[in-house]
Length: 85
Image (cartoon, rainbow, N blue to C red; front, top):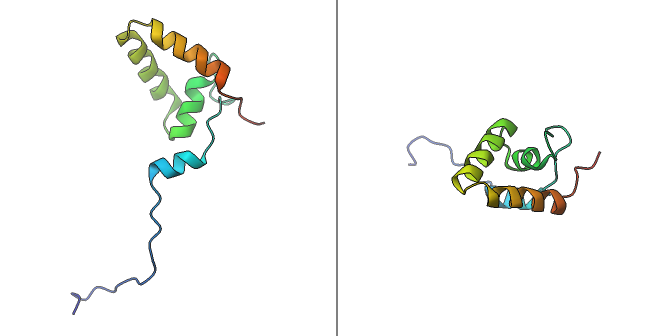
């Protein structure tokens, strides 16, 4: 009838990446801190490696002539709360 496959009758719970990220607060990292923990916090939030996040941030900052990336980092440093201990 259905090709010999057993059909699971339980409803699947679809959790999108955006929904999962919306549930997690964005904090400055205490563990992956180099300057202020901003890139480490973003990496934790996205589930990425902190080194990859830092390299991507530096490349994007250089590609935008550095100044907007530096201003964005300082703003995030001020706005993002520290990770609870």
